[in-house]
Amino acid sequence: MVLIRPRITDYHDILVSQSSVDFAIPLLDEDIPLYVDPFLLWKSPSQQDQALHTSLTNAFNRLSVLVKNGRKDDAIRDLVVASECSEVGLGYSRDRQGLRIGEGKASEILSLFEAIPEYGQNGFRHFEEIQLYIDGISRDRVSDICCSLLKSFLVDFTIDQCEMLGIPVDDAVLSTLYDYQQYSFRADQRVRLPVNPESGEPVIFVPKRWLRFAPWINFDDYFRDYCPRDDVFNPNEPQDRVKVLNYNRQNYGLVREYVDAKEREQEDCKADPLFTQIPVTSAKRKMSEIRKLPTGKTKKADRRYEDLASQLLASLLYPHLDFAEVQSRTDSGTLIRDLIFYNNRSVDFLDEICSEYGNRQLIMELKNVRAIKGEHVNQLNRYLAKGLGGFGVLVTRNQLPRAMRKNTLDLWSGQRKCIVTLTDEDLSLMVNAFESKQRPPIDVLKRSYVQFRRDCPG
Amino acid sequence: MKRAEVDTFEKLVGQLTSLYEELAVLSKKSPNDVINEFKLKIVNSLLAQANQFLGEKYVPFADFEVFDEDDVPRNSDVVLMLSQYLQCFEKYRADNIVPGVGGWHWPVDPEPGEETAKDGKVHIRTVAPKRLREK
Image (tube, each protein chain N blue to C red):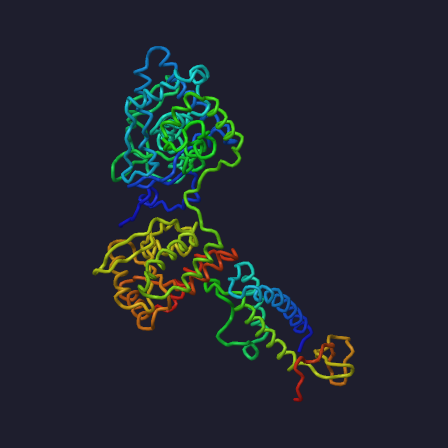
């Protein structure tokens, strides 16, 4: 069975939707484009999250004790180790592999404890403030340091979730694991964790409630709204980031005020969802634009149709189908764009698609043509034959011509392949259902399938 | 005709009418909106009772029984069908009532001890057929 952009749950045939689980479902061959924001732990009403934030800050501030005790090399080593946590798979890496910071950068971070007396004496309250002093430290490093220092908790969380969902775990070796009793990293710890079947590396889950696209306290936000640029830069001087960072070192009070302000605004700090549906007005606008588009390639109408239909369908079918990606491929010299969805079996119809046709993912091929021809049906059929299951959807403008309808019915009779269509009419009905909330839009797809099966012989 | 049949008729027509009026408002506002499963179940339950009552002779369409949830019917579909049923109920009534003293009546079989009219039936008053025609 071929899986496109596989997630660990789909790989193990555990078909759950992202919205129904507490963690961000890891992808096997790339990272999830979100980051852990320690501020979300700090502001959480849960005592557990607050306590974890306290442990995290304590662990980070402990580095200052090492420096004071003349063990700066140990502190540097620990910070370098903490700076990458590949097991959680967060960020923008295409191969789930990141790089640690260098010793020089670690030393620069540790120098904050000496350079700014407040940090030396009291430590950090939010360690992500380092972004405001050190160049090259941003959301990915903050997230990785956070995950590295909380890895022990995350391992337990992962094991719990695996037991709950039945995700297989295996003997794995974590190259580093933070020991809160010793305030240091232990090497090569054996644990039972799910393993990435492609790389053999252990995988750790992260609670969804901790994830944001950017930390609540971050440099860009500070620079945009709080940085006194008139004081930092001379008139007409280029706005160099490093100059701001150096200025901050000399003006701790400013950073303190910024952090205090962010703490006051904590109510606005929310975890970012892994997928956001487009609003109803936007869906209606897109539908109306689709209606006006000509068929064919005139003025790149095909491309526009594909863009609009993919944005619409990804939102309309959520949360019953999690959107995986838009995929471009070439068949017989023709560029084809498909939408791929994870089949969560969240409704009876999707369950049937999985059990009868073996679809762990759903393929929708987009065709901005006036009438579907035999070659279009064959293209999708050939693609399905590559191990994607026996069910596919042609998203097109009009109903299938009678001959093509017969063609798809023959495919069902001969090969038990089911190719159904979603037309402009169907999309419009889906948008109506999306707006009125009277029925889930996926029922329209089910309708196409039911109508197809009614027409099937026998 | 029995008194119980008149009771059932009046109950069904009352329910169908109120449902029709409610959904007609929705349908005027947004005819293409899909109807939700809860409303559809109620509609289907009423239509099933109506089919049983009307029998082959009076049902509006021989090949329609109830809505299939999988067909995702819209407000206007349901309103259209309800109005057809209401017309058929009216046709049923028009065929079964008679003019009498002071208006139109259902002639029903008497129960023991009940006073009957000259035709040996008990007469229950009703309104005139909506589209009164000479028979």
